[in-house]
Length: 117
Image 1: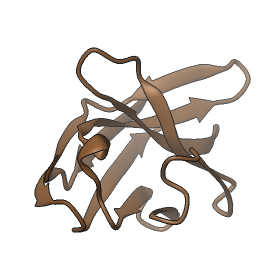
Image 2: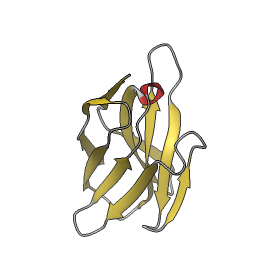
Image 3: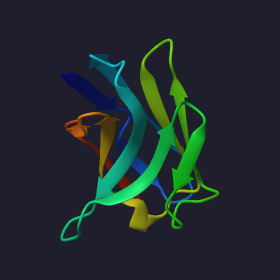
Image 4: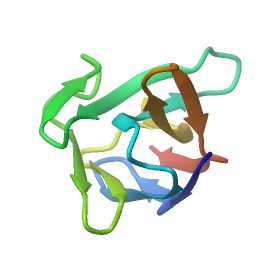
């Protein structure tokens, strides 16, 4: 099993920044990809960014150039640096970890990000 605990959400004005953290614990050797997803009220959960092997990153078009995902292997923590925040970034942000063979998905409890205009 893998446990994920997010932190760092909050209320920020448009144009501001926040950094989310996701601390992972448990059986981490089988985890290769971690990422962030978000879900706004009335919308489906969507991918924000992923990081594979600690270096290969992937971003949603809506956050490219504004958000940066990174991973600290020593601390078993994944970060999401969010800059130039917009009201449309308001959502609950969830940390995700993917276990390979067998494939299994783990989720954190979510952290609220609210961007005021």
